[in-house]
Image 1 (tube, rainbow, N blue to C red):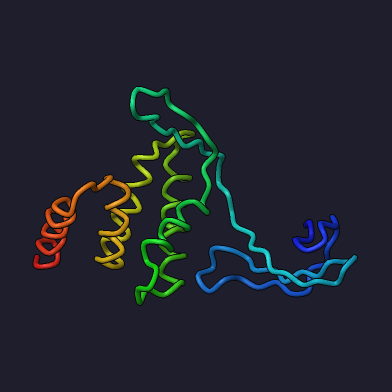
Image 2: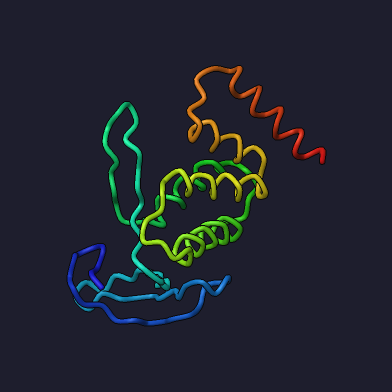
Length: 158
């Protein structure tokens, strides 16, 4: 593993343990050259999945490898300054990753992933759900927020 401080190619594992939700292994490493310590996470990848993105505005489709960290960043941004435990966010992202990798398809649309995130956030935190939806569904006016928020209240009342 390359050291993030000096870019040396060798490090020693000092400690390994599973994460709290048992979806990854946390490793504490030490660079053999500069002595810096850092943490890495090892996760199971069941298959290579390609994300198909619609270009919009008549552009062609684009394809790129599935990247868990993009989902994680989006969910973290939606949950920013909310009382949502990091553990819950990790569980949501791991669940989406598992769904994508076990679906049996080598390609998944970015729209499908967005819907999975929406479903997860809806159950996790209503404000984070609205925040994510505002970007995902491209709200352009305050009225868009009002209409969407009224559907969230209706769901919560059920």
